[in-house]
Length: 446
Image 1: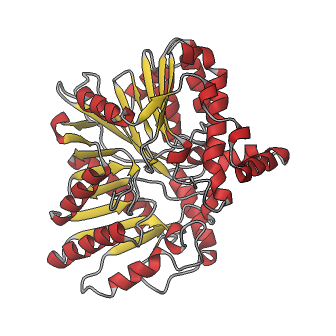
Image 2: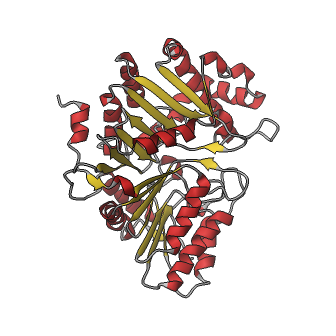
Image 3: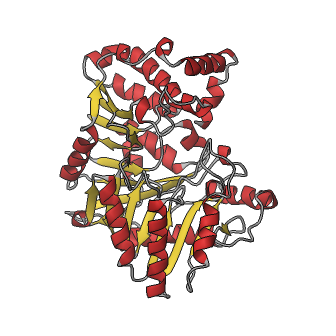
């Protein structure tokens, strides 16, 4: 049997100059850099995110894209967002035409149009969305789990904390663009969102089914490099669905090959079974585990108790129930400091970080939430950074320091609230879920 580390080492790798790899530490830095790169674009702009919102920050980004196109009509501008998400309002809001109405409105104002594509990963949003990430401007890749709206871009007084990496690499940029062009742009299931005459999702049923089957077999295609002294490697990975998902497979390999330490970032504490199993094995063999997760009040679905209760507000509490159970089982490892759980909370801001750092040698940058939904339903990608000479270690340690700045260490599972202390509406919801045994089903789609 080939060891997990050997399998990772066999993956084709893109060589990267460490001097052209930059970590940003704040949402405002990310916003400024993204806008700056768009303004200076010469040949192409490809933006891929779950959504681009019709709010101040989203309008600013989209306006800059159109303005860049007017200055340079030869500039290739393609935006990919989730088909379903773009055609509905926010969860809990009234029925609207969604962001697509805004896209159509803006398209009419300019002489030279851009391409805004809706990517339908499944017939229904609840069973899978476009969770692919990456903003490619010329030969620069800005990789973040963030979508494009006020809170992700820290437009006003609130932000949603994510990770932000700027990588100048022609091969990586071209590889990611090729994937979008090959699998998305020309597919019959993919349609324009800034044109008013759009097909219905129902009419696309067969095309979407075939599209998902195609995505399940897709991969990033590139010629691997032999890394030279002074270079780091980048391995782009993509996956959707439970079977033959290379991203999932290599996430498990990452944990399995750890010898010293693992840092894991996730906003929603709900590990897939295979990840939980590998973490358990790593603890057993003496690996030091650090898990950074958002406090329930830093969850993007959290609603303060003084506001009207909505069912969606139960999600942060369900994640905390999972975390409390995990901490209780591992109480001895928490006490010995082999397992460290850090809860992130900063005023009324929210937490959206994902990824891993293994033995200071491998860093996974991803939009994957490391939960069953990401594992089985959504189209996900990630960049696996291979750094055997630890040339990026200082930057990643700075990033980890910035992530931990607004966290507190959980000393015992008892520090996490029990169900009995939750607001009454949340208590009723959780007990009902457990009574009808729906918790196991919910964990697969949350």
